[in-house]
Length: 264
Length: 279
Image (cartoon, rainbow over all chains, first blue to last red):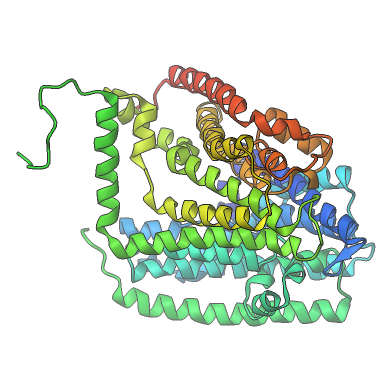
């Protein structure tokens, strides 16, 4: 356990050195937040009150929480593992005495822990100033929200990790990567809350793990759901966590048997 | 090696145009060589276009009009913006990852070659797969123009013709500026995304749905609404919001010229400023 803790800490420190990148990311997420908030608010004004269960203030809060959590939750992913397979460095990773998935997972949690404040706070401040935020007054949603965020970070990590692991079988994962990004961005509720979708698309989204990756922690944090409902949503997250974990472990197991590292 | 396909006089002066043709055709042949990979990439790009549309549709299907536009009218904006962005991305998308090029020392390789750096960048990653996005955008635009019930006249036809080209030039200029900016702020790639990808996002949506200050900024500072929304107002005979009056519909081309000029100057300053990575 100690090794993973150290990995998470060093990953935290590594990301804390890229300060300009954090500032740039916070700026861009705030600009996108302004655009998204104005589009959703305009539609709600035309509809006369609420769309998909979101009033104007709730939709604005949804946008700003989403923009704030975007980077910490890891919705952009990274191709580190795939490039290590390409370069052959994966051989070093596999010969280490730590579990491959767990070591990358720990590093991703370290990254998320750093990203929360510098990338999360600025969009929330901009949101509070421009549209205002409707945040709950009781501690419950924040506590459960924290659990939900950790679960969502893990889900996003495992999703991208599975795509990276495909590089054990194929030479170029770019096509799969792109496909995953496009579908995940839409179905996670990042662009528009999933309850705004037409019925057929909403049903489809709910049958996938994607809403658990963004919409769930955002809705819980905003206090849109009561205690029981929130607990059920976190339960769904953990269910998907178990499913993805099994898939990833199978991929590591069978993939590392297939893997051929050239040279030496 | 003599190739029967070379018809050019070997003693003729090699102009940039000849080189451009050579470079681009070599790139295209290499990309088409892996047919399966190429086709899946094109499919991915089409899917990207589809989700961008679904994103718009997910908002519009809840309301009768969005930013004062019907679904067919928003599709005109979406189609024009998609075509313009796909063209700009095809030509200049590579400058978006300029910090990578600088950091890895690739820029020095480009600088020592007797060719303009910009020309090499534009051809170094001429991604034919991005044509998938262009095809989807063009299809959406044609459908939209048929659905939107437009009273055509010569002026509108002229505007509809120059708009995708002016829009493409605007996105090229934005990508160029994004690339130039990364010479000063090496870690600032995401900063530039606010204007390039943020610009694409704004361009494909009805401008009237934006907050007033955002309208002004993305019309008169970063001319994103001039790419598709403002010309659409003229073509569809609609009145614009306070920040984007209908007369701005004809500003796309002049804005493209001015912005391209400014960004080229910025690019030259950036190349001059470059002092090497010690490679």
